[in-house]
Length: 388
Image 1 (tube, rainbow, N blue to C red):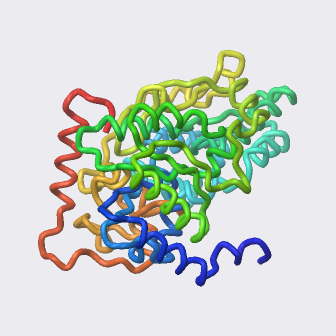
Image 2 (tube, rainbow, N blue to C red):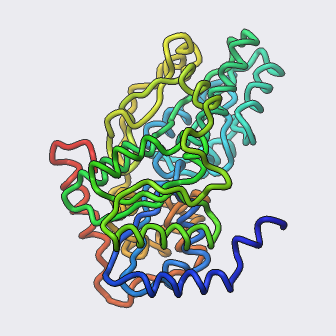
């Protein structure tokens, strides 16, 4: 495909790797925030080709993975109601809730449908006036504009049978929470290019300045990521901590003002729970007052659900970079894409799914640190703090 193969050129990749080797004089730990970037790094083996000492830490950048358990249980409680059509994107249907998943509910007769856009859900509400159509909206700032536009369109149409389960989360507060953790090893970030295409990168500048960490806005192809790592390492080697933009073909500093306007009309910032991590202050979105009538959790009175995570799953430790999927005792045995214990093994952007699809195997050592990582993570998050 034109303008895609150019970003997968093996000759240029080898040149970037050689330049990285010549530039890095000490070990560095860099976190990619986006799950799409994680899949490229793992699928292409880039994380294993980097010079010795440069370690990629996989961050909480999978929107499906960080959708909290209670949100999924709310969706399933609504889907089980007669006269209700529950819609969402395909990868949400297999994410396990506390007892089952949406795909299983559909097999048992619930009206659960895959849509390719929130506008598809709005159109269903127009076509099915005698049904309550609910859209399960998840994601980072990337998907928020489309979901906001769907609500605005439904409002213009005067629909009373359309509502949304909102589970939007924001990237900068998650980065701040990670950096506030005393055990944090991250020395630089690769920021998600699609998030910055919407929001720009000005919100990252105070983070870079306060924590003295380089942040490089990066694309998703192999050469994007190699160049992003190189730009981060150059800054680290020189003692700099700036926000740089590698993804110049798609991202501007001010982002997309029209998309931001749609978000601000429909949503406001609020505290938000992240699956396996806990509640992070001002890290998510909820409806503004004029559009609260589209809030499905309120409409169906399912807001007060607080299920417990599977104690065997170390998703929280994986999502925060405290552990790798291969550290988990259940990885590739009791937890597979067909029988997932947690969301990171389900989603197309999940770290566990990336490792599994790439054939990554557990450590050769008989002592796998998954249980220790889970205990350390649990101790941190249950000690009165709501951040990782």
